Image 1 (tube, helix red, strand yellow):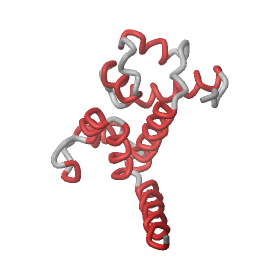
Image 2 (cartoon, helix red, strand yellow):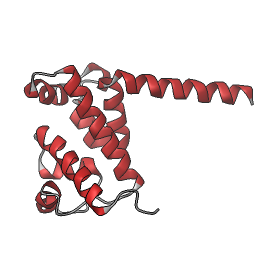
Image 3 (cartoon, helix red, strand yellow):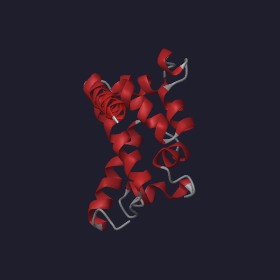
Image 4 (cartoon, rainbow, N blue to C red):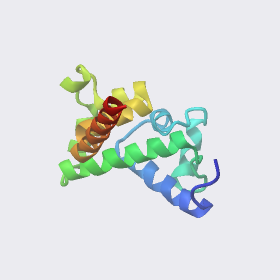
Length: 143
């Protein structure tokens, strides 16, 4: 896979995504796991935060970035005046996750957990996924 972004663009993306995770008040280990770079030592997180090191340009990392940004945007829309409410939503047990917290679902399930949480908090994304699944089912039924 070739590079999708220049080094400068990827450094900018990295800084913004790490900033979102900082707003969620995560441990360095949890932040690295959510980004899918758990093999990197947590002590290197400041290099990503200061945009000295860019996240790897892999499909999985891009998928994780997309979901983190989508979740952060949806939480900002849902709770526009309260950082504390955004953090509380991530850390409060939720009935749709069998009384697990959204954050624990993300940490336990990786990309799938990010997608499940995003579908829950971002109705527009959930509709898009539902529409795509319906279209695929209709196409399969026709063949």
